[in-house]
Length: 196
Image 1 (cartoon, one colour):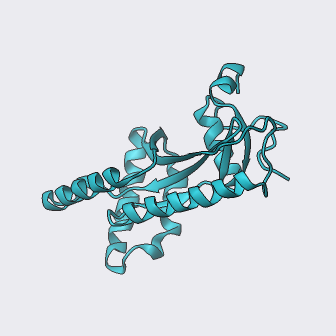
Image 2 (tube, rainbow, N blue to C red; image 1 turned 90 degrees about the vertical axis):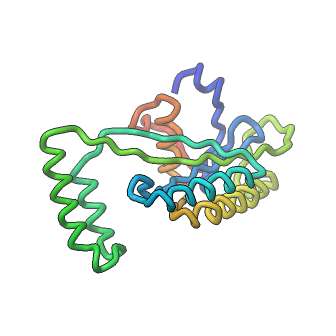
Image 3 (cartoon, one colour; image 1 turned 135 degrees about the vertical axis):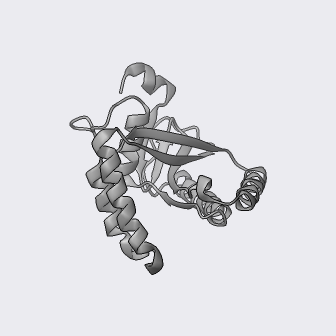
């Protein structure tokens, strides 16, 4: 990560699903799995838009939405769908097999893109200390509580739309932040991403 980016986004610590930025700003990153809006009926689409608007208007804290697009590795994608086959309703499983074959055929002639959706939750504490916080200190624990509650509210608001969310933790959180800050896909050697 370059010096200019460290100035803009000075990460001090990552641990426990939180990122400490500067002295007293904490963030948590949620990954969201959306529903296919285009496959819904016009009536369902209208209902979902109204529900999403109500969710956004009801938020009392900031939420940043990031969409990450990259080239899909078809083998990994097909493998993931096969692993989750038990989650698919029994009457839809034959359609899943057809879909997997379709994906393989399309991937043979063109590049496929994958979109991932992330929600960044932040909380600003009030701390005048000049050293990084360690887990177990009062402000870190307060940030964990506040951001866990915010995650719960986001989860409740989106669940009615069929959107599931989960918090990025540990190295996965570090990789996300590092990639967003222009660091690429791989972790640099010798970087410590969690408190000991």
